[in-house]
Amino acid sequence: QVHLVQSGAEVKKPGSSVKVSCEASAVTFTSFTFNWVRQAPGQGLEWMGRVNPLSGTSNYAQRFTGRVTITADESRRIGNMELRSLTSDDTAVYYCATGTDRTISFWGQGTLVTVSS
Amino acid sequence: DIQMTQSPSTLSASVGDRVTITCRASQSVNNWLAWHQHKPGKAPRLLIFGVSNLETGVPSRFSGRGSGTEFTLTISGLQPDDFATYYCHQSDDYSDTFGQGTKLELK
View: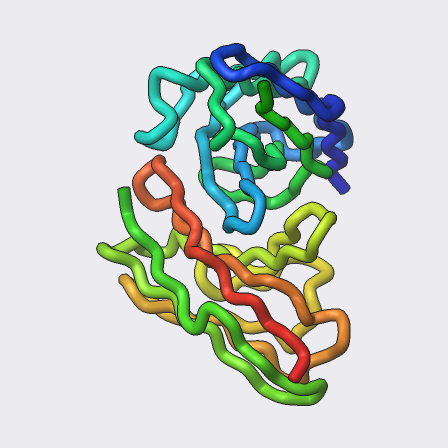
């Protein structure tokens, strides 16, 4: 069973950046992707983007393009998500999720990011 | 981006009921359609992938069907553990989107 462990909660000022990491263990499939999905308070799930650690290729949701960078180090099984120019609207729980190709199969426990002055 | 519209937004049901949630896509998503279950304070859980394939360990009372732009998730014989929010998820065009969610609550 794949296990994803995310970094801890963050409190950030408006205009700053946040970086959240995710370490995958017990991954048995040879090719997998890291996805990042967020949930703002009282809202639904919102996909932000994914990276394929083997190819290095990333895809992003249009609304985050230019403001988010998703990377992964395949040899370390760690995925990272950096979101820049934070506003209060970015306050959310950020989930790391992994799977093969375009399937999301396993989810991390979530990381709360609070943006407040 | 492909828009995913779920209905209903809220569904009230009793233990033992059979319920169906519908998800409509703004264009064809081929077979790149999954369903996830989410409970407050917990990680979401994949239930079904590829429209109708049950993820390992998911009870057989969950089933999915559909094609093109219209899909359904059916739970036959609701159990207390099933009360949660359900999301459809498309990944056809490498820019995924989720439906807005359907909250299944106890009547």
